Image (cartoon, rainbow, N blue to C red; front, side):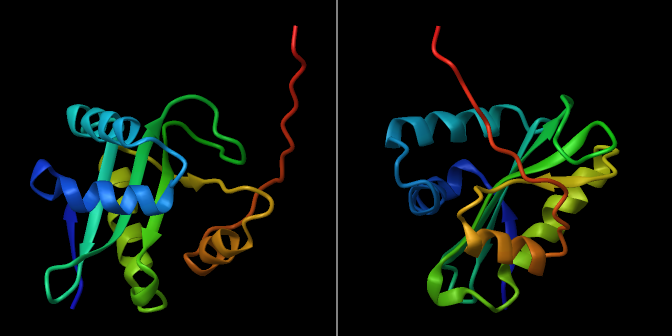
Length: 148
């Protein structure tokens, strides 16, 4: 049995651990600052943690409310899935689906009509997960820059 709980200070160490697994190149201090920001602005950011029957935290979903244009969407505001992670030993058991359902419900309470997300062109695992969760691909983008 999986329970989905909002992220909180009580689960801070587990939340941080999952973030570090999802975004390993991000410094611990940066993770902690982002967690504080999420907790400080609950109408702008949301986090949900999945707990297994033994109370171990095995999954994470973070989302934000975006009012700016989000590629591929037609409405505003939009709930944007900033990140989703399920521990490898617990994948393919519906944990990500349960997390997404909580993200979607949060978006509905904020009058959102769409849930959006993105991933890199080379992250085929994430693309497959998004499709499995019911997302439809809307566009592919290559970003450019020129140093001045």
